[in-house]
Length: 523
Image (cartoon, rainbow, N blue to C red; front, side):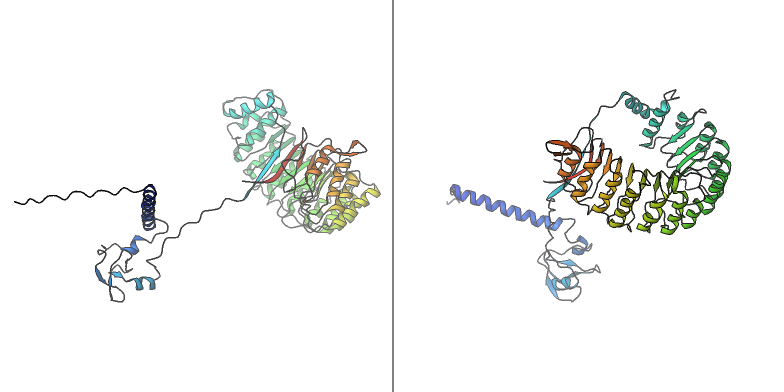
């Protein structure tokens, strides 16, 4: 009897190393292609919606026959077959394409974002110093301010420093502000009153009845009710400085002026309800005003300035900058002719209609004791006009050299203006701001180092000609016949924002902060 024997297993042919490596590479490639197909079908971002493929209905098996729901033709079902949008039946490939959906379209591969070729790096050179014992104590007090019952007799300067430290994180509240109150206070400064509501500001007036000077920053909660308390409860007040008294209306301002005829300093910023009636009341009831700031006053116009002309009793400080609408040359010339003789500080920034005529007809003949001048954001000023003004000032010698000059953001000014400024005031200037003078030349910039021996703060941001060598000349002076001459010996702060030719290798000097050094480094 024959018995069927199982066939012997075929012997595997032994492959060479080269053939074996080739086979492994082929298998690996096939596996990768399979994974790619799976990814293409399941990618949540690029794959076709499953509702387009099945629309909720069970898909017939691949290889079977179906009639198209649109054209009625019979077609073979594949894995690319799509369901009809109506939900009844399936579509042939031609009808699916006609509907705007390509069943054979491969998912788009997202492009890899290239890393930027370079990265801007900003460096500030500041001298590291150990904190003093006083500053450490102030930091500790600020951290635990809500656990302190009384500050004690630590001096007005330290109390003000604690108030300033609290303002960094808006830590001044109705619960801890009483630490700064004292009936014996002659001066009080709160650098951030954001969290003090109107009743807390009323309490301030009740607990500091002998105040002579008061400064409140960010006092947006100050309203008519609390300001009327200031009028009645602070009879000795001679100077008030407010930032952001948005809610105070005309009657409250008028009542305050009537109750303080001895007011000498009135400085407000951002008060949209302060109008012409308010300035009339100020002029009538407070004729002894010496310091006046009406900054960012929305209703300021030429009529405002005509009222201020009545303050002929020796106005020393005048700031009428940042109006909503610029005043005219004629109005400002008339104002300076009336009050300019005793002016020490003047700020007319952002009166964009001002021209060289204001300098020639207003400042030149009428100011004699000016020490600080701010003329920033005046686009109508010209390089030649500013140069002629300072040259004429130097010849007439009506006004001594300025100690502070901010004439920034006037991109039409350049070398002529700078050389004339330095000729007139260079040896006395302690602060100079020419930020935005893009066309000023290297030669004129080096004059700063020759004559600006008293400079302490210098801002040359976005002056294109500033480079490492100019900075070196300012810090170290220049060598003539083997002798070092010039240099800004007292310089404490130098701002070079936007000066792309100043690199991180620029010279440094002990005690001088260099802010805004920008350099580009490859990744």
